[in-house]
Length: 324
Ligand code: ATP
Image (cartoon, rainbow, N blue to C red; front, top):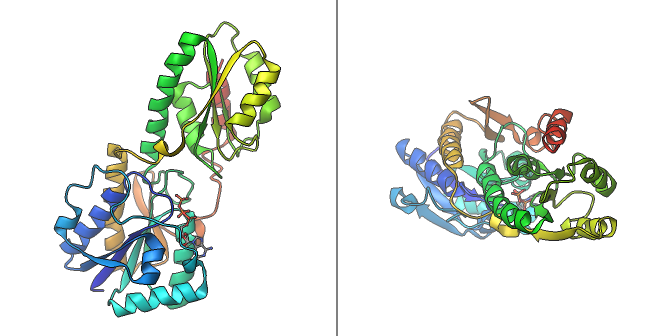
């Protein structure tokens, strides 16, 4: 292997730049060339490649987003699209790929590596933390801290006005952002797709809770079956007409910002491990960290959804106990 390609794909996540930097530096350390592929699989299909060197990754470890840009590529989902991508790699003499992204990215990578017997190692880069084979994904720590910082501010105003705030956080299929950040802000209730508390369950929780508490915070994952914070707000307004209820959707601020030190270190470790993995003959696998150890997990296992461990009944009980 002489030349490794690197790309970021799917939703961006803080720490992707730290991961790119680590891949480039490790490649140079091991005397490899490294090619940056712009806009994920879309750039791969169209041959949007740039040569990377030591300098191209200077001063980016602290920056959010991704200098390689990211995109969602419909073309890559077709067999013809992937064939185009393969031809581009051959043309540019790229021998292996490192892809940084989430479950969609690995689904595509898995197809590609099987179809063309082309070596690919993945790095978990997603704020959702919804992959198997790693305790944490790059970007999750920063995202939950962003949520906590925002909701702490909402708590100040909620407390001053005796308001109930329903705060919607990201997580279409996964409530892991809602769960951790909700515990971190001392939320009165947390609604996540994995738990199905529903509006009735929420009303019960609020009725059982402390009546003398001035402010209340309810965290809702966008993918929860209640259908978003505004729906919850409407239902609660009908039930508690005398309570001042407000809704706040945090939105894309959750993707941006400087990566936390945890995310920078995780990304740095994964980036180096991915290059070393490629050199050791690894392919079709994602780098992860479980109980502090680095491990490689096959793509098709990494993308299996729902980690029962992370949303076990024990976590839900914890939320209930703390919301008294
Ligand atoms: P995040 O979960 O953080 O948004 P992701 O990697 O899951 O990240 P997606 O948009 O789902 O983001 O996937 C990224 C890209 O991977 C898609 O735009 C597409 O090009 C490719 N991809 C996704 N699913 C498939 C599939 N079934 N077959 C081939 N390629 C796919």
